[in-house]
Image: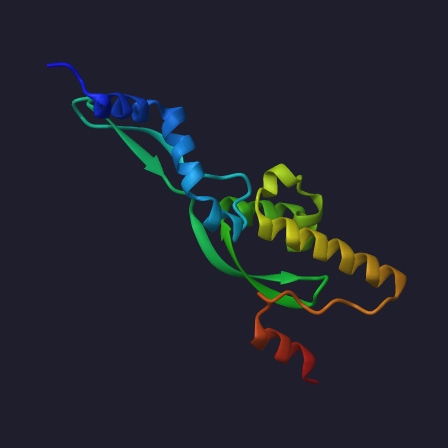
Amino acid sequence: KRMSNGGASFLRAMNPRALLEGFQKGNPGRAQRALYAGRGIGVGNQVSFSEHKTRRTWKPNVQTKRLWSDSFSTMLKLRVTTHALRCIDKEGGLDNYLVNTQPDKLDSALGMRLKDQVAEQRRRKASGEELLPPPPMADKEAIKAFNTP
């Protein structure tokens, strides 16, 4: 029996590149609101004992963490991948990571917005101008604890 049009789309979905592109098109919203550090959904084969291969995906390990920002002197509550956490540790903190990381590696609207805010805050501190308020994802309890004597 010949395949109908539905069979052709099934074969196209078996192509790993086409499968990955489909996931990337469907995932920009969540990835734009977090720091993924270049990580995305991975695709490959699940191989059984009999070596029967089945397509599967690996999602990035995303955690909600409170990270200290030296520029804003407060904790920021962000969704980050564990890979991004290692990169942040290696760079010496969230602010250094944001400023030193290339835009294609940040690859999110949140990351670019924070990068611009940290750079502007550092510029204002150096010139003695009035500082920016903390970003909206700042932890309110940490701000209160920091401001009380």
